[in-house]
Image 1 (cartoon, rainbow over the protein chains, first blue to last red):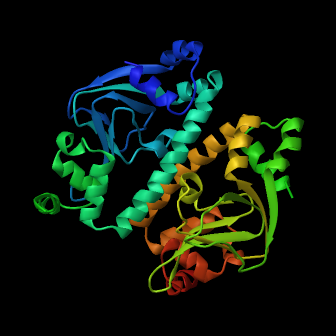
Image 2: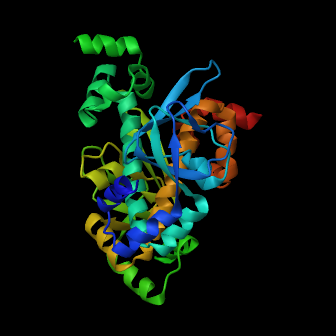
Image 3: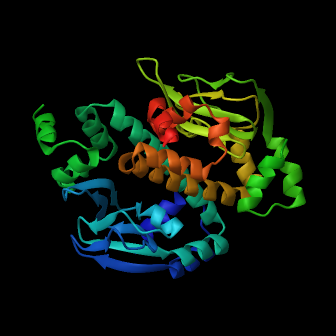
Length: 188
Length: 188
């Protein structure tokens, strides 16, 4: 259950045996069935969720009822309404499971306690957020600069398994393009 | 020269006298005249810049030669092409001084060394990046959801001094609205 988390942590920091024994105490494990909701807009996002197995998506729903995906998160990714989690404001995102998923939940108080009791976690989250800021910038530039085909091919290059695993309609929503465009790209 | 930096750090972390004696060694001080460039697109962004006094802006220039401001940074703010700094890629941002400014420059190697030698700086940057992620989300939502008038009034509420200090044309560019719109809002 914690192997994927340890692997992700150890890509960025060193963990002692003591750290490894201590870390699980801060998390609550949860199983989500495919399509089960973790968070709804209007609620408070009280936890950061780490995906151990499976895949989740976060999204907004516009006034026409159309989903706009903001993140696709599979093994090794964190997902939350981060603004709601940090600022104690109401969430604007929905989060649900794309596949049956096993997740680890870190509450706000446990997050703060973990950072105190395992100081190397400060380093882990500093690097995680640093990378996330870079990715957000890249995604913003990409959405303004690249064609639908370039965006789709770039995503496939970064995550080769995505086309087998994530339904085309979700990939299209994530990239802000239509499924017809993806079909056209695939036909070449 | 370092008072503003210490003040910003101490809003998020505790600093010992030893830390305070050590921190200046990692920074290079620099004076920029109004309109002087710190970074051009196409160069590598080798430093994080902390604004001690004055104000800077970061921006892109589109193919029509129009500036699009991505950040207005005054005392206590950091400014960089963060993606370029972290990933060693070419910058897409220009950075210049809006006023005569005094800045503190932190190179990549000094940044990494500082995080090792002053461990509480891990906590500082973790909180800085965490807040930055929240702000970026808020700005993205704001740009899609609020009217020009709401955006302008929100900015003035957050930073009451901005209308005295930052030229209207730069505020307009930062908010993605026209100066005519600001004039109209001011007339009420």
